[in-house]
Length: 397
Ligand SMILES: Cc1cc2nc3c(=O)[nH]c(=O)nc-3n(C[C@H](O)[C@H](O)[C@H](O)COP(=O)(O)OP(=O)(O)OC[C@H]3O[C@@H](n4cnc5c(N)ncnc54)[C@H](O)[C@@H]3O)c2cc1C
Image (cartoon, rainbow, N blue to C red; front, side, top):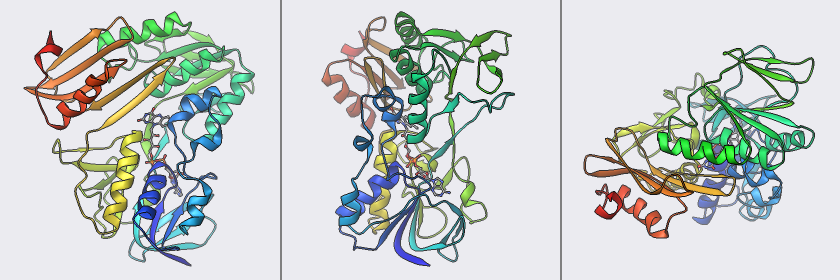
């Protein structure tokens, strides 16, 4: 059995940034191993639904650290290695196909898995989900041979993929069950802006549509919705959300509740075992509530934070949640969390691609969406939310 002082279970974004932090803080050669099902070194996922999918970015640009980094710091990469079980009392990971990896301290970073379609015909060729590099490559290749795409799901993955497929020249329909796009997050005005922006660029919108059947012989030919409507398609991409990847932890004694339950130090209930990123249901000291975030920034910052806690620097994770997305030629950013907000204020013109939206609870600013606004607004968003400050008057007028 290989034994390491530190092991990261999962080789995604958390792993890439945690490994870099551990290396920068001077761990010894041979002290760290990453065990990952992936066949690639840890890479950035956001480009998979943006520049990489469009064909503007190459694979080499995705890697969080290059191969020389792992060699130089003596970090062992166990790729294409799936962990079947965590034996927390034996301090080891049991691998599929046999073999074990022992650890003194473990960081669980298994991320999340896509929700798949539960409908007749879901197994037809031409239906894709997007989580990893291979998925993005496969969709890109399929797009070259397709004419009509239906993208299912009106949140950020669906919106990004629909934008790219339309830019690649496919006749694209974005279909979603709600009456407006990304209803859970956007205000009605924001949805209206994005819907117009998509329609102006040729994307067809199918609102209030839930897919119930996929038609075709071997390959998908059409999507049928609950309403009875049918849309022809030779490419279907489903962005139906994700669930935390916790199956590997069954029976390991870790508390699981909508993710791996960790405290404000990202520690699980098993001593020396931490969790971070998409899989972690962490105690957020800022809001006094539990959260599980599926954001790039959360994976980066929790990865680095967990690395420091592994090294004995035991401090709480205190961080304003942050998210970004790019669609067509637009880039927007979002800070904070809208829950419990009792006031929403918009600055700029929400019918133009330059506006910001501010959520407050009482006299505290709790969240902000900023798109193509002066840099001062970006800085202000971070300052107001991290300091729980009120929205200044000029933004209210
Ligand atoms: C296409 C796409 C676009 C995105 N765009 C944005 C964006 O624009 N903005 C934003 O804020 N966020 C975005 N995100 C979200 C962001 O990428 C994730 O939050 C981040 O990747 C989470 O990192 P993680 O390390 O927790 O999980 P992951 O990066 O998913 O890594 C999980 C790792 O665990 C491995 N693993 C799981 N189970 C096992 C096992 N049993 N044995 C071995 N290995 C295992 C997996 O193979 C993988 O290597 C996007 C995500 C995707 C998929």
